Length: 233
Ligand SMILES: *Cc1c(COP(=O)(O)O)cnc(C)c1O
Image (cartoon, rainbow, N blue to C red):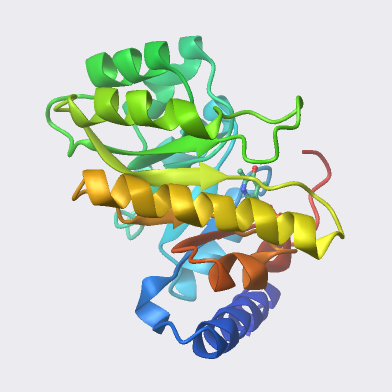
């Protein structure tokens, strides 16, 4: 078994264990493999092991990978998620290729994605990014701003509002981290009450996936534990 396959097994075991301990069911949590900065071969290896959902953070790098894989036979059922900060001048790259964008954080970006999503493609799945830690370095909007953006997305026929995403603080203070995750869980519940299409709380990375799943996460985004450390970003 390849190293990536072994790593995927370990991650899936971690997910299964915490799902069981949290009295949730395994099909409530989706694994997104974060392949940013990693070569095509790494994605292909994970694919061969059955992984179908991949997350990318850099629009140009991602577009090149998606275009290469789309020219090879056998990779046409990958679900691509854009999870990085998205500049408006790169929105078309994403609108024309991705299945999901999880980092939507402003009205202008919603307008552009709606305009640029090709009519021949399925509507683009959207998560709004929340800056739950309030750190100046983090992207995302404040919790209270979510509702106006959610309304705007829900009114767009080329977009589907799926939920919210956050990158909680990188801290060893578990109480602080748990507090941020609990606030995301509450926000998710409120949004779900308003929109039938909302089913995704995207939260949890290599270091904190257990705590995230215990706080209701429905999608964990895992890079390092699957593909190894990154040289950059
Ligand atoms: C890089 C990245 C991840 C993956 O982080 P790891 O700690 O490597 O698992 C998840 N989410 C976002 C938004 C990222 O940019």
